[in-house]
Length: 151
Image (cartoon, rainbow, N blue to C red; front, side, top):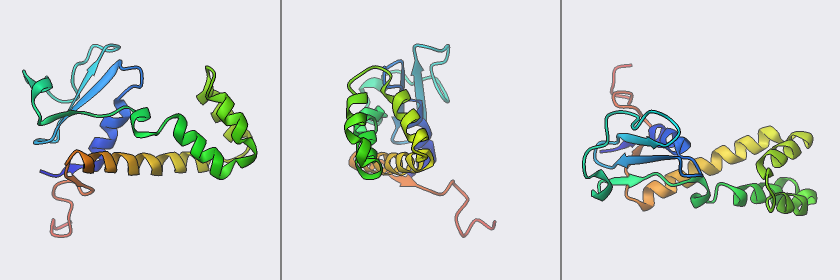
């Protein structure tokens, strides 16, 4: 079964780097299940089936840093778009508050929209690549939205 890419991307965005939110994706059905320490919800859809943690049909959606979308991405952006600030950016990421300071820098340099675009494209590529490596069949069209759907 092909899973809608936007659904996987939404699930990916729910995963927290600190581990307080985890999402399991069922490869068979495409359903995503959220487990959260911070909220009183345990799922996005239905309750996680018994034994899902040991079932190979369920896979944990990775964290951003696992896909190189944290510090590494900010450094890639700085190298390409802010080469004069690269050393400062690298230093920022050795201290607390790095993302706040980085966001302030890209705002001051008037490249915040470029950063958002860079980040979005990199996220899409990384999530698609992760799905391919994990044999998750993706589609960009919701069911019934293809050219033969009569719309």
